[in-house]
Length: 283
Image (cartoon, rainbow, N blue to C red):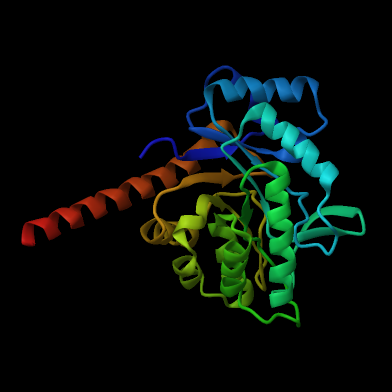
């Protein structure tokens, strides 16, 4: 299945991409890097957009904060959306600021019924202002709130249902949380509503012995690939992205990771076709 493989658009790869050397299907931008930027950055995006679909991925939506939705930020986000026509707009299921102050970090929200209602209301307002559906990404976390009432699986499903939004399912983040919080990663994926999943993320992380840290600075490890295979088997093929945001290697190295994911998808689809063929023969 073609058209699924994506990587993050990074300045160190601009020249190769501009020269037509990119082999992946699409690119993801960090939305905040192109809001109010003007000039060269936006021109570059528009050039890339001529040949490759673009996804907008943000870090400032602050959807889990007690603050109201930031209408000024959403106005700028909508302007960028209208300019580059992304195939998806996404951010994170977290909070990163309060009382107008932003740290651009991804902090976990208390997984409570009250938080589900509050966040879902803000998501619906956000989608109304943007005139577009959004996808929220499950984040890596390193602590849990004492106030938690729901499991991460229950909380995520409740948000998707109540807010009527989509899910950017980060497979690496699920694996990190499975280690950090004894979460059943395979069960989490199996219980996500497939119709809500619009994209997958994959990345490397750092093992700090007592916990895993989501660093996006290395290759994807084998257990995460196994989990990705499970996601394809249970949810089905979707556009996927390999994130590499620190110690960024050459473009061909990042693309090679994306092609590993593509091979997994292709193999799962071949296995499925063979199974279907056997069933028809024995029917």
